[in-house]
Length: 180
Picture 1 (cartoon, one colour):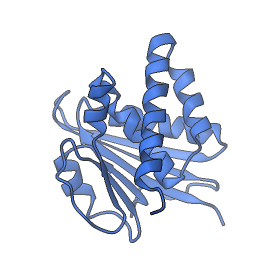
Picture 2 (tube, one colour):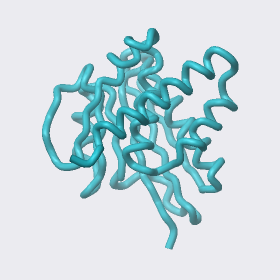
Picture 3 (cartoon, helix red, strand yellow):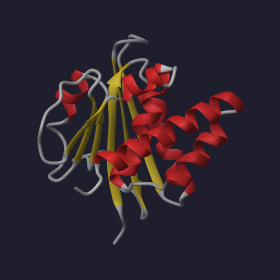
């Protein structure tokens, strides 16, 4: 039996969710998995809806559409409203508390990705912090594969900043999901 993970990353245009999905897909390929990525975005470059679905499977991917996501990352209130309800039973729903009102519930976890990125000096890193958080919380991919994907995509200062953001997200997930 193959391991299949269906992941939805959604937010507003300009938040970098499509890049995060691409990095997720590239990291999965580096781990030897089969991957399908689809994207959807509004006509507006910034502020419109932006969403990517990534399917990661050790086996052949016959049906190339997400039916019930195992993991949802919502970077905006609109994304949370749209995709939280589509999550499968037991799915992990992660969201940015910078923009999405905090809520309680089984398998819900909020973290201020954008505020954390601002404290790091670049709000444009919020998506990478969220990606590190997502992968550490879900276990869908290894940190090493993500770091390799980032290192292959970016050079010098951008690489270092993105790696620091990824590690900050993973560390945040470890603290949020630490045993009580």
